Image (cartoon, rainbow, N blue to C red; front, side):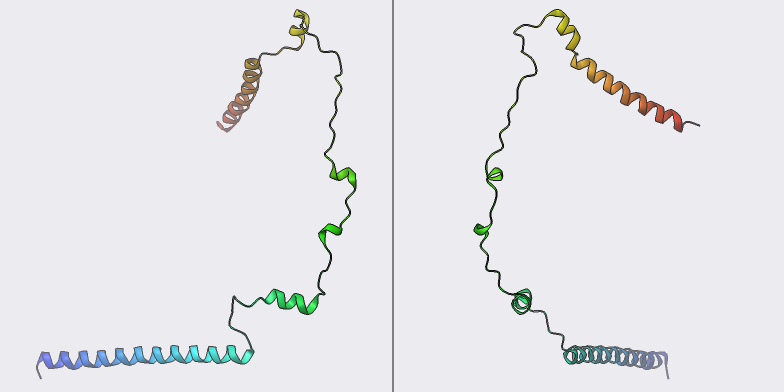
Length: 133
């Protein structure tokens, strides 16, 4: 026997074994699928059908039909009308403001913004400094 014959016989054996294993696994897979289908049928589990309305079946069996009309509900008139908002001025609004009133009540928006940002920035810098060893 030469090397070619030996290699051919080895390849035939390997190929035959590989084909046999593949066939074995395919047969086992088919048997498992068939057993699963048999078990599902024997337990009574139905295949899901989206066209069936399961909720409607339950409602018809368990609960009586609802016959009330939403128009029969009584709502007090106070809730049907729009609320009336009224206000009275606390004081008479002057046509012109005096210098004292302006100084007393006026705050420059830029100052308010700067004050708010300075507080935030101060807190931020303090957090950074706390992390420094």
